[in-house]
Length: 224
Image (cartoon, rainbow, N blue to C red; front, top):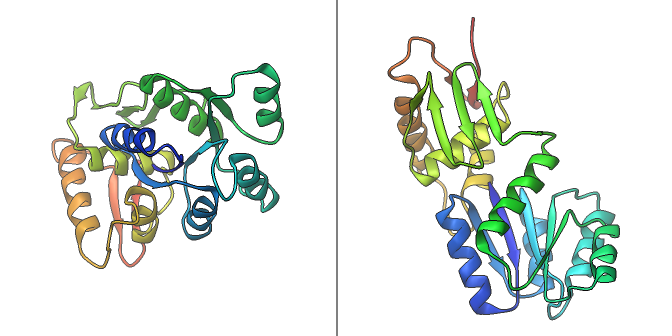
């Protein structure tokens, strides 16, 4: 999943980026509200972390513009304001969650998982297709009861495919959600990772789940 962080405390922003990157997320980061809006206009995100007090445009203004434009991406406010009224105001204007600084990074990861599950209409952290299971909370993958070890990028691709199972996913969609702005594109990197992933989840099993749709992309589905 691809996440946008807008946080003007540079050290905290850097630590959040490191934490989310280690957890397998693709991350874009900025330090003010105007930069956040520029990112939101140019890319699609699965979750947005907004500092409430930012220069040029605060988190409330960014959220109001997002919701006014019809953007329903989950938003989690990060703020030092801890009064009940501040939390109520943030939630009433369309935020999905509200995390008070200082916070535990494990809690932040749990809040992101909860927000993105709600956005995707999922009630459980466990995604399944046939005998393939991915647990977004435990960050584990099994097939037929066998644990499958994946790299961070392989896991991110599989999670995206599991969220969109039975649907053809294009190269552009994967590039947009799995890689950040540092990714130059134009190479066979996506193809290489799909080869790695297919080898790990399909090679030892008779029933294949990951299929290439020539000229369109890939689909994760159980075929008769």
